[in-house]
Amino acid sequence: MKRKLLIALNIAILIAFLAPYVIQAYGATANAYPYHPEVKLYGKVTKDWHVGRSWTEYRDDQGLSSFLPFNRTNENITIPFHQIVFSKNFMNKTIASATESGDTTEFTVTKDVLVEDEQEYIYLKIANKTTLTASTGYSISETLDISDEPAVNNDYYLIATAKVQKTASNLLAWGVEIQYVFVDSGATTRYITLKIAGNTGTDIISVSGGVITVKVFGKENTYYTMQYKIQDILDAAGVSWSLVKLKQIRYAIAITTGSTLDDSTTVEAWIKHALVLPSKVYIDDPAYTDGLIVNGTSGQFTPSAGDVLQIYGANASKVIDVTIPFVYEDTRDFDEICTALAECYGFQYEWKFILPKSPTNGDELTYSETNITLKCWFDGAYIDKLYVNGVDKTTQVTSKKVNTETGIQDKDRAWTYLVASSLTAGNQYDVELKVKDLPKDVWYDLTTEPMSIISWQWWYDKLLLILAFISNLLGGIGSSWIKAQREKLRAPKR
Image 1 (cartoon, rainbow, N blue to C red):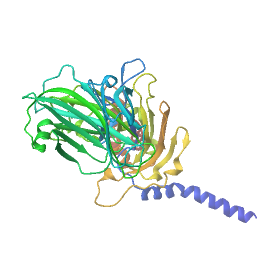
Image 2 (tube, rainbow, N blue to C red):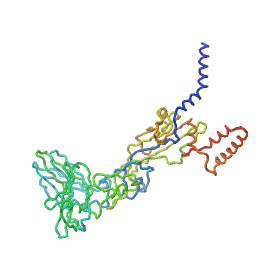
Image 3 (tube, rainbow, N blue to C red):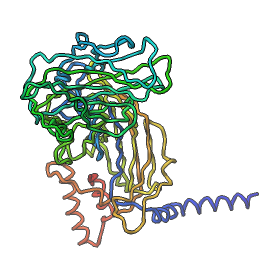
Image 4 (cartoon, helix red, strand yellow):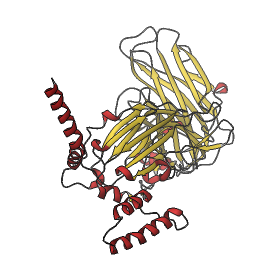
């Protein structure tokens, strides 16, 4: 028994003696590159974007401008055209006083001007109140006079945004129409109709009975913006009108029944823009020769466009509910984030993040796809501790390896780890990371001698440098102590 205890004791002593060398040998097989680890918060924020202002600006509960502590990622921002709020969205919006015409005997009509997210829109709905006839066209129109009858010419632009939706299955065709009624230089009334159809078909510009129709298909329950220069429409239609003023505007829903009928046929339309403008509407973006033209469903605001939104061709106040990918970094001074640990050739890092809460009375902020991600250029073997809000995550990264393949740059060798996701606005997230026993050359590359001549560290380092010179003259007496003291003075280098 005593012999076994003696053997066990000897093994324990041997392990204790060899442990530093085992660790050193293991460390030698691990890899590290001279880049400090990074912890960043990524996500998307959905908010109103005010024209002429940075996307980070928002109205807080006091009605004042506040700014999100974020930067754009290198991604496009999608601008939904139907969510542009112009100072004037319609040439005339008084739909309640419109002159109603068409198949009023067959349909009950609902019409109103409504507001959602501070944006007005015209709502139209038709529902049959009698039995309809198969394979037959029907329409309901709401016509409004333009009181000032503004002057126009063929270089003006028409812009309309709307969506249409049906509930019946028996319809062959259905769509919403915005018709502009002009007077030409010969006092003749001229009609141009922009039509957004829910049924499928081939987009077309056609002329029938003195009416030009520009029609797009396949837009069921999808907001779509149509913007055309009047002269381009006339050229495509093969007519030579010379328009001089706008007289009326007409909003309509038109349908064609199928060969079989449903008991109930309901079609709804939402109209957000119906304007005649002296120039095209576009968003300033250097990625496009003529800017990002407002036409279709949405456009991509590129990183080259910067952080400020500018809309030309019409006065606009904002775009509602724009979703913007962002990255959020801890912007404190680096010496507040990182501390050098000379005694173990390591570092202690601490990052802090708080997503700003959405104001109660100001501009709403909605976050999605949020996560905190660690990016590291050291093998996980060098990580001594990783904590997230006090929760130990160390074992989840100790096996991580940097990319040692040939042919890639060192900055591309890092591994990543998802620290946290689905974050809550207003909560503080603390990430603590400790690394140790880094290769000396890496540690030295990531630190620097004291730089400020007004600091005591700078003067003490220079005194130690003089002592090191004297030590060399005396055969290196005390050189190890001097070297250790100078290493303690080294500060992290960002």
